[in-house]
Image 1 (tube, rainbow, N blue to C red):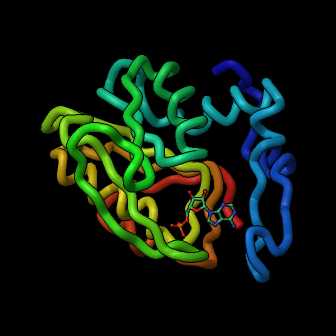
Image 2: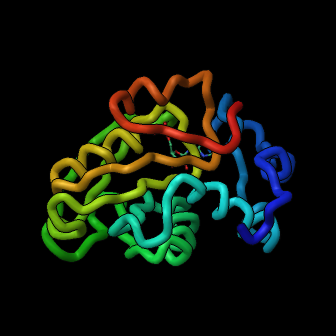
Length: 178
Ligand code: AMP
């Protein structure tokens, strides 16, 4: 580990709470202070990848958009490829799509049909688990391409929204629980 003394408490202390963003009643968890601090960012990647042996998976899958930041860094650390799950309409080749409900609004995500080879082992990463709709949609996309999900890992989990219930059957882990 790059930062053996860094704990999830250090990360939690750096997350900035923004009330009523992007709409009234939502407390937005701003992770940019973590990204801006090299010690916290690298420590966060160390903790996110702690359960996976480098070289043991084919790809890290990151969810649009903040999942790309953590996912790409995790992929390099794990000596794995990186696969984006993007908002619908952004990927240029043939895609699978899944529609889902957000904590605020609804959306759809997509993956290239050949993004992971059948049976490929992947770690799915996003910044935050809220209602679980986004991650559940991403997991369904990975099942469509035939990938094996080794773990679904989040930096932050809003436990009161019970997102884990949408991810039953998968190993789910988060670093900071609210
Ligand atoms: P959900 O599908 O409800 O689990 O929402 C997860 C996605 O929405 C994540 O990709 C987050 O980036 C974003 N999100 C939802 N709620 C929040 C929040 N309170 N603060 C920051 N991001 C959020």
